[in-house]
Length: 199
Image 1 (cartoon, rainbow, N blue to C red):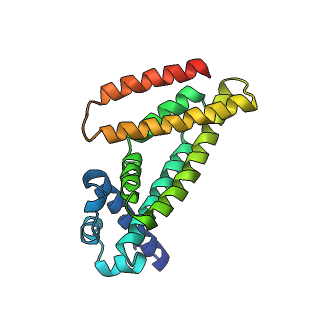
Image 2: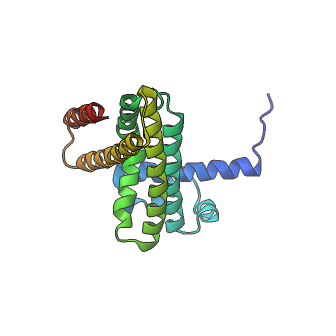
Image 3: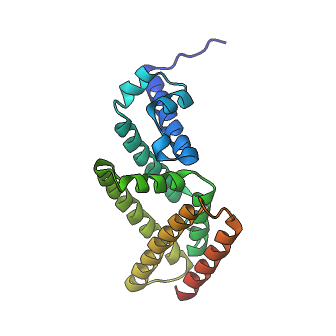
């Protein structure tokens, strides 16, 4: 059977995908500052020339990875099977997206790195704002599935969703020191119950 050759566009997209995936994997396992161009290219199985063609500088690749994190995370949020089954299911989905995937870990790494990098800070701030807006809206939408809500209650639910995101980010930071996931889950279940009771 004759193999179909990939088009230039398909090869280009494949190379870009490999570079972004390798970047995210290195950031997750070794941290932001260990994501050097050489390590990324080796991990991706891509030549430095191909990498330079797609991302001329380390900064351009890392910024693209920041945008990729948010893109994938928002895709999970909008397409996840539990997001419209009520607020409790939405919170369970947020937990799974946090601890069964590498996206939030990478995002926290990016936020920490942005603290001392002005160009990165601007990108992270803009993408974070749009991501939080999307999560707030999905949270309010999920809550409306469980019962009727007025504008005031929807705004309150949106605030609680944003606080929940911050809580999960804090739990991710704790991973480096306190590795007991069951204790984090216990605390999150307590938070979730408090939230459900007041909404």
